[in-house]
Image 1: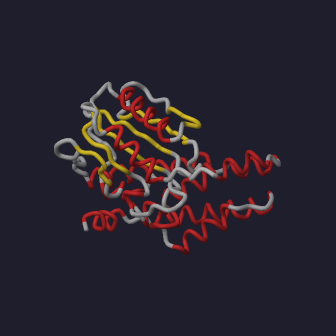
Image 2 (image 1 turned 60 degrees about the vertical axis):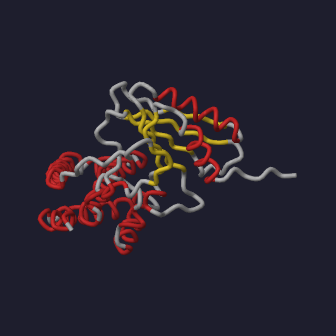
Image 3 (image 1 turned 90 degrees about the horizontal axis):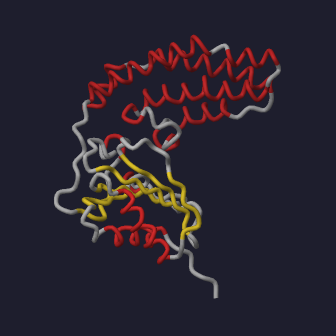
Length: 264
């Protein structure tokens, strides 16, 4: 008889059950797609833990024991952060589960001020375990957020001025790989970030995450048309078109209007 696949719900339940008894754990919650009400069959499992400083290894060990009891761990991938980082993080691919149901486990130091709980950026956490009062999001300084966005836009303008010619340089050399790389990194990445400033300023630094859901469909379709290139001639045309759009998009960012939207 074929073994039934391990479900996303079973993974979440197993993690929560393993962490609830630990006295070092203050809270456990789902983030990512769950916090935005957007879970589907391709969603990974984003679980965050608020734990006493210095106890991340204890948390990981408890979760790994639970996953081995559930069905086993196929692969574990720890992220490498400096010791003073606000959180430790490991990814787990679980035997018998969909490869998309990847467990992304982040263990925040209890003393960390920012645990990614700002609902404007990260959605509403789905708490699985709480001991006492659930952790509260830090006060979001909207003015500081807009100041940081202003500084970032200024840097993107300067970066375009300095490195914008790198696409043409590699095109003139006939270096297709280098030209494509610079097009993606110098032009398209900046364009997406500036569009995010206009249309989802609270998450302007989120890269490609949630783009199809949060940017206007027309903007996504136009960007998509520029992102896929056939050959060097097509790249040359699209790089110029994307650069023109980048300049237009930067000029269209209205910080006063953005601040009004963030206040509402």
